[in-house]
Length: 475
Image (tube, rainbow, N blue to C red; front, side, top):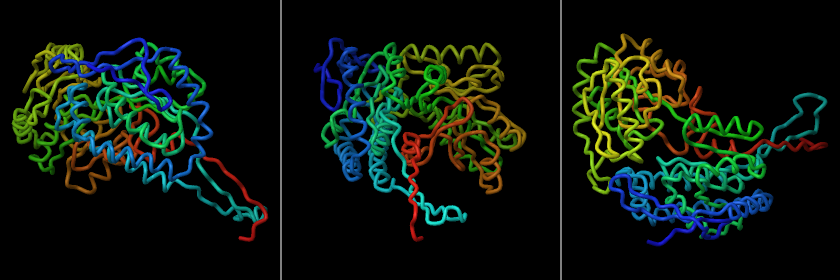
């Protein structure tokens, strides 16, 4: 099998070591990636630092066309890329195709936002002392961006860091997850087809024990991290004077109120507690159900879970595939068993076969169980009955996380109450918390992170406002 090169300052390169990537479903080799040496990593850093001023000064049309080109090429190679995502991640091909489609949109939206991301003016003569003065306000990139990306969306979550960086004229160095580097390496191939200057991007599949040196390097003033809370906050503590954005975890809740469409809610909760094998920070982990509809809702939910197709991610019909590794599946199984030992009832699933955990529904779970308090990152759903909307919203907030929440209701009053009261970064009315449009602001509060993704939001996060004041004008 050919060894895939990494991307060093826009050009393919090979190091002395190799990283073998295997399919978590059956252990087949999905690909082999070359690993850069420390010297090659230093070359990438030096190149990003050297090109930063040229990158910031790139004409808008150059940046926009580069992003549009990547969007087009992703669409042209969509089936090939989806197969690659499925092979390295274990994601069912159905969901992998969806991820490619989202990445196509992410780069397209970034190209559009690049053309709109312009300076604004502000008259200052609101006071007599400022007569004749006008402010021209632009946004300038902080500088090169270190993008540390996770395994669960190995293409689109890379796109959400790379595309905004290029849009604002910031060089970007991608450090992909060791389990899933192949998709980001292919993205590097498409970026290399553009007219971006050398040094504008590098994709470096270095092991995690070398990431700390990248984080600390002063030539990378922005660190954009998506992953676990402990690692994210360790990064923030490591470089308190850098601009750090963190998109961390959650134990997302879906609230089913008495006026909800129970069939719709059951089908959506079942699917999106198990999509990506539950390996999404906004997968439904807690379903908080008003007691008056619990008896009607629960059998609908269990039927929908039972109907999910579990199996080979390459099969067109599969909806739930394996977790990223056997070790990850063993951890989830252990958490389920701990909950059961504490008094929880298993209404569905609960078993494990290799890296695959059966879609699991638990009831009567102790309040302190990990499957309630922590982020499971697996196909596990906990049913929590409540007496009222008040209790439901309090239950959502009874978490140290606050990424997104879903509320199934037909009431506009309850929708606005939820938006006001829920301590989360996003409230999805009439659907699961797992909904995300790639152009919308996305991020959390509490221990779910700082900063926002979503193309425009990330562009703002990667830049700072700069004011020029013009004097002596006739306004």
